[in-house]
Image 1: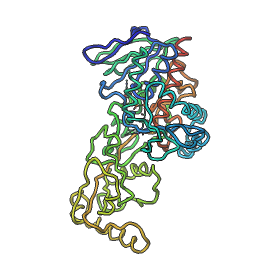
Image 2: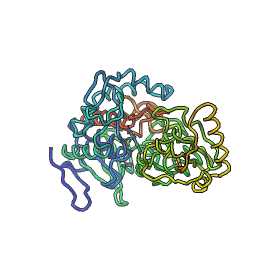
Image 3: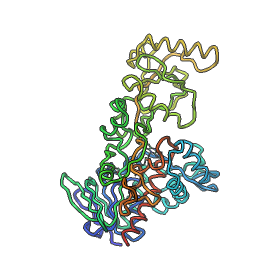
Image 4: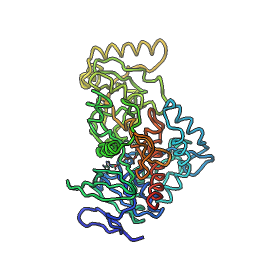
Length: 457
Ligand SMILES: Cc1cc2nc3c(=O)[nH]c(=O)nc-3n(C[C@H](O)[C@H](O)[C@H](O)COP(=O)(O)OP(=O)(O)OC[C@H]3O[C@@H](n4cnc5c(N)ncnc54)[C@H](O)[C@@H]3O)c2cc1C
């Protein structure tokens, strides 16, 4: 394999094969695209990967991830106990309320079993459980250094293998023709057409596109912040749909979590997520309590709070804690708003003071009569909350080889989709911790292998 050449100006890289002679074009430089590119290259194809973000922002949402879910029958250095594939599938069916494509889900779950080996073989480091630094999880393995380290390792391996990489370059046109695909790549405002024997579209979701957000979430979209990359603009999804791909998903549903309203509008990652809800009360701008904060304390409880907050007047709410509650909550990136009195806190958080006072009296009376956590000990603290969107539950349908399903029936055998863009095939509602990276990496690997196979035909 020929070593890649690095363009001195911009860090835009090219591999030995000229772009006009490429077997497999991969769009999207994150978990799905990188696993696809590496798998296709290892299967013997010439591969070029285009990433619309600049080099420093490569890696999409995957940069923010920490762990991934894997089926396993025995303990491994990165996961204790066992989590059989059947248990994984049962969990997926439960959270999706059976809104999943079973054969595709089974293929991805089976593929999760050797995902750790695939990642390690391609330079990714996992956290060993023996160091005792993890939250206990038999279902998920943790990435050493997080998603950013994973992305850096996979890019290094891809380039080492001879995959060409272009940053600041977006897939902007897509035509499937007999025997090949024609794509257009946009860089610095100009379009370059190229042909490839197979194309893997791994450009993530469209949650950073305000029009798509509004179509899915209605008025709530105006206040929702985007937790991940601003480059998830849905351009790849629109191209696939225009090429005849079958849409799949549940309109109006997305994965939303509570985040600090003072955080950035995009790319805040997990840093601005607010997890202290069980230790206080969540109220809307009128001071009315939104729901019972301690009704469901499972670890994924925060995903129930995003939609509740998005549904509040103005799409805003606030977490109110007293001194005791604050001492139990995890430290946050931005310090809480504090005040010696509830009325002072209400004013600082733009909440109706009388409404908050009435709610807190009620909470304290209930705590006295039936147990529970009163809001009583000053100083009081609060966080302004909005919902942050991780992804939306829609995309394109694929078969078990990650070939794009067509609206007219059948599949496009040279057109593959991997990662967030096809996740709704198996996840039309709900979520399981660690599923995003697993779906992306396993579907990417399958798509890359399939693309290399069809390109060689
Ligand atoms: C804050 C946060 C935390 C998360 N934590 C976890 C976790 O701990 N575990 C887990 O499993 N999942 C987690 N997820 C979800 C997980 O990150 C995603 O499901 C997964 O990374 C999706 O990978 P992907 O490769 O499909 O897409 P992405 O990572 O979103 O990447 C898509 C890439 O495509 C590029 N792109 C977009 N359009 C184009 C175009 N037209 N041409 C070329 N390139 C394009 C983008 O720049 C981007 O780099 C988290 C998500 C967020 C936002």
